[in-house]
Length: 103
Image (cartoon, rainbow, N blue to C red; front, side, top):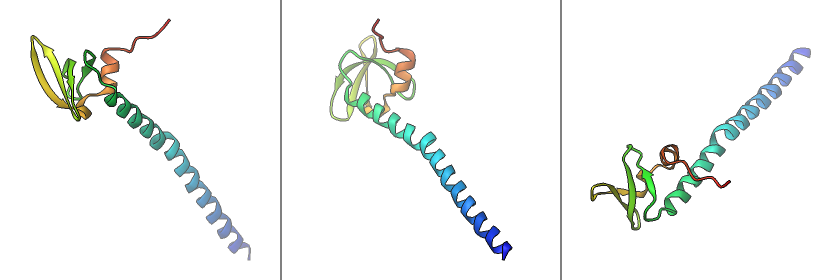
């Protein structure tokens, strides 16, 4: 009879361990990814003319025109390229052109 109780206890502890691992995965991977996704979406919606940006492929430029899903970027000497909004990276832009801090 003692053997059956041990097996029941093992099932409970292994189930608890699996739930704990799932919680760790959710809090360390899924929630931060959703937060970054929301920040990137807000960044893309807030693009304005004259803003310095970097595309995901590393092209530097200044926003010249923002249409629905297309952004025209001045890359220098009156040279313009058109990219989709989702090609502009907030992380790279903030790395090269840090946001101005007040203070």
